[in-house]
Image 1 (cartoon, rainbow, N blue to C red):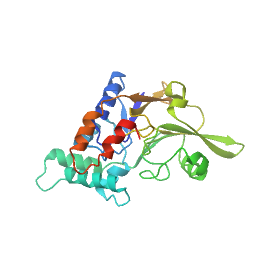
Image 2 (cartoon, one colour):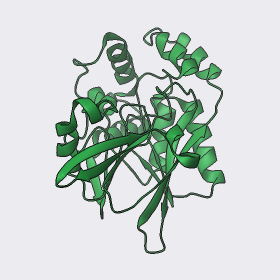
Image 3 (cartoon, rainbow, N blue to C red):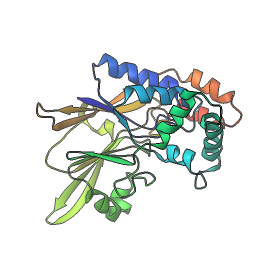
Image 4 (tube, rainbow, N blue to C red):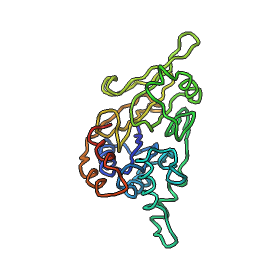
Length: 264
């Protein structure tokens, strides 16, 4: 059994609450699918926690933009990336801790495969930046088909901040796709079978599915280590301290604080 978190976005209060829940569940193995930074006020503390608590971390688009540029970001997200970069980028006389945080982000891998399981931030087609949306089931089935061709059995993603599972079905030889949000699953659990599945684990630091509670998943395994079911977990946390810290930082738009309260 292990946990998967994603899209922390420098929200220390949310991350701490999620890690506490994981610890209480006696789950020791944690994977992070990226976007450790961006939008929020506590990038340094979040990086430190992820470095010490997660077995590995995948590069997200915000992590990537910090190291390259955020030219394709909206103005609000770009301003936060620029401010975060000024905070994190080491100089000639920077501390060891600051250099280690920067090097951690610099060395993040864009994908990892472990047996039949693929871990990326965005999509199997474009691991860092491409979104996989629920609407793709109707409007972009070819995009899903190309993504599922890159999946052996199971893939975990983040990026959209909207949790759910995409399932590949077949009508004869023709593939088609279904989507289930956590509230459409009994007890928020999807039982794995022979079908290929792409699972979005949701967001710890900035949920966007109308539920302000942090979201992550627990993957249950058989005795031989084969994933058997995916459990979506929501964690309530006090977002007001995060909002207050955001409001005190001039380079973070207060929309980043407001949306924590409404989960959008």
